[in-house]
Image (cartoon, rainbow, N blue to C red; front, side, top):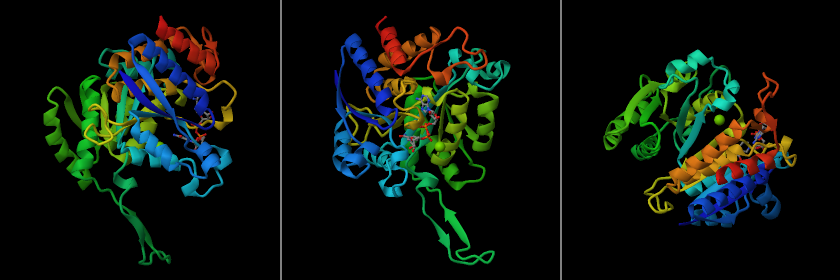
Amino acid sequence: MSYQVALVPGDGIGPEVMVHATEILDAIGDKYDHVFNYVELEAGGKAIDSTGEPLPADTLEAAQQCDALLLAAVGGPKWDTLPGHLRPERALLGLRAGLGVFANLRPAALLPQLRQACPIKDEVLAASNPEGKASFDLLIVRELTGGLYFGKRGRIDEASGGHSPGAAFDTETYSWTEIERVLRAGYDAAKVRRHKLCIVDKANVLESSRYWREVAAVVSKDYPDIETSYLYVDNAAMQLIRAPGQFDVIVTSNLFGDILSDEASVLTGSIGMLPSASLGSPADPLAKNGRPMGMYEPIHGSAPDIADQDIANPLAMILSAAMMLRYSFGLEKEAKDIERAVNKVLDDGLRTKDIVNRSSGGANEKVVGTKEMGAAVRKALEE
Ligand code: NAI
Ligand code: MG
């Protein structure tokens, strides 16, 4: 098969890490007989410099034509003084909206090689792990284009405390369609994982949360092989630290997902390790071959403080490419192979600076740069 992949290398360390993602994809192409064609696009700071706009119309159009979008990171101090609507980050919002990607998937797994990066004790981790290991592997699916962040908001003119407007409000609104499609994205993800899905809400208080449960009661019938459970968000925040091993897939609203995914990321170590996927619906006009349109990016930013020094960790970017294979192309075996190769280089003790074990002073570890890490993953794939 051949696939059209839109690329936004972006700013700062973006281009440095992106080059390794495409090299790895090419290696996968050679090994499994796929062809990946790349369409390199400008967005963010680079686009501002060349066109004056963070997301030129032709960039969005070209991305919509492709099967998926890989984005490294955009932004940096050079553009920080621009007004909001002209800032590089606008490109992210424009791409998410323009590609219709409403389900944000953020895996958080503790790799045994980076065990020291997680502040939770072995016995605490092991107690909730189904195999009794001091480890966890969960996926947060955050609704990305609705809820509190997109609801009606405003100020109320009535005076309060001698001030007028004397109050402000935000509202949480979720439609059946919005809830159903993100739940389905969660269930589809659970199918290729451990078949467990936990809905996190505040149904003891919020009407919108009770509505989520009504939708879930209907949608879950289509996934009889997946175990559905519910948790209130305050309890979920506690359970993530107390017993992260109990979770497989968590599906939640925009607000709760924003908070819980940051909480979960701290359990895994470096920001340089964490990929993400934002998916549309397989029924959307932009979907290809029954697979959702997807935008794949590391969760880190453009890290201007370490740009052009060959020290950025390319693994979050490489693992984002693996997520693309899994969710947009249905290439599960190939995605797993990339993850295996990343595991192998970590097993071999290779570490970029951000993942060196500080407590052991890096004993049995070899500190490598961006290029050496990328090349090692590629070599591990070919083995
Ligand atoms: P950041 O994620 O770029 O950096 C935070 C810290 O983590 C820095 O110390 C950085 O050196 C380190 N870091 C990040 N990625 C790393 C990697 N792959 N390997 C090793 N270390 C890594 O966040 P920050 O500093 O808040 O933002 C920098 C710029 O990136 C800003 O202009 C911001 O707006 C933009 N940004 C863009 C995002 C995107 O394109 N999706 C997301 C977050 C920030
Ligand atoms: Mg956040």
